[in-house]
Image 1 (cartoon, helix red, strand yellow):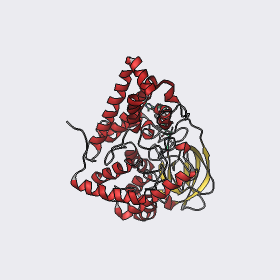
Image 2 (cartoon, rainbow, N blue to C red; image 1 turned 45 degrees about the horizontal axis):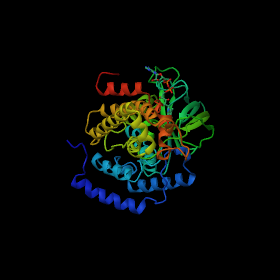
Image 3 (cartoon, rainbow, N blue to C red; image 1 turned 90 degrees about the vertical axis):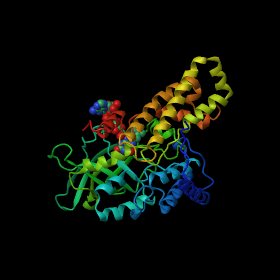
Image 4 (cartoon, helix red, strand yellow; image 1 turned 135 degrees about the horizontal axis):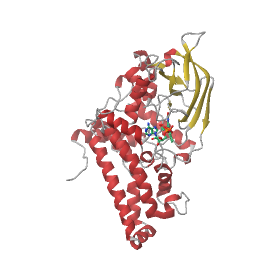
Length: 407
Ligand SMILES: Cc1cc2nc3c(=O)[nH]c(=O)nc-3n(C[C@H](O)[C@H](O)[C@H](O)COP(=O)(O)OP(=O)(O)OC[C@H]3O[C@@H](n4cnc5c(N)ncnc54)[C@H](O)[C@@H]3O)c2cc1C
């Protein structure tokens, strides 16, 4: 059986439209980016401009409602868009932090006024939104928030936020807005004591400090068709009595846990509907095993290494098939977190097999020795990083909830 996803007639005619639009709008001086930390400001700005063009066309958030600036496309058309962008080494969104994570929460819990005010700038690519959930004592246990957002005693329509977030954000060092989970009631029971806000990123009292991490993101993110849409840099954010108007509150006071879960459903369901993510790193690795004289000689002289090549081939095929199964968006609800969990865990196996086969070549970006523009070194650093977007344990909770056997 041929497990390929060929376009239908309707998809093919949409693909023609997409290709023509890309010919006219995708800048032709984009350099392929493998390590986002090495992307120049100029290349970042070019991608930002292209992101805005996608937004104006409704293709930055193609599956989201047209009335707020999304594309209103079904997964079968979103699939075509992602495929055609991938063919040009472009991901959707082209840059990280372009708003998708706050938007499901605003759609589900925002007032009509908030949807009209907040969603169009996100969907059109005009604002970057950081997601601020994690704290030193609230990672997997996200409900354990210590950052307080308490009603001001002097001005009742304001909240005062104080606390500390960690592992958040990306480039640039100040986003236009921040989506913040807080504790808004010091006495209410757990899960009923939280509130969510989308606030301007430049309010007085907010301090942002970059973190020096060795990882850029997760293996699924860096093994994709481009490295340009990866977080790259994470930050600590400190709130020192930051005054926030109640119009920034998403959902009701005390509903923060439900609002957050509207986001986590999407974040942990990565790849359910309209997306078949390509494992560019696996493709490059297999190609190099066949064509690079040093590596193919190494394989010939050490036949036991072939097992590792086979493991990577099988793993990447299983990942591709799980992706395809989810592509029409009609599959079981556990399909998204199952794929996300599989891809993350496959990453840990991939990098150890890759290190066996490539030896020191797996660990360098040195121009003289690096293979495939240094992408394997990026993979080595990120393959063992399981926390971003939630730990495997958090994904398992998502799967069990979808199966109706978890809380
Ligand atoms: C590169 C990177 C990017 C990130 N981006 C963001 C971001 O943009 N926004 C944001 O808010 N956060 C972000 N995070 C934070 C990320 O969501 C957290 O790191 C993650 O949720 C885990 O939390 P933790 O680091 O506190 O680990 P912990 O929760 O302390 O977990 C440590 C270990 O204990 C295990 N564990 C914890 N609780 C349980 C349990 N109940 N049962 C079984 N095992 C358990 C975990 O699986 C893990 O192995 C990012 C992190 C990284 C490293």
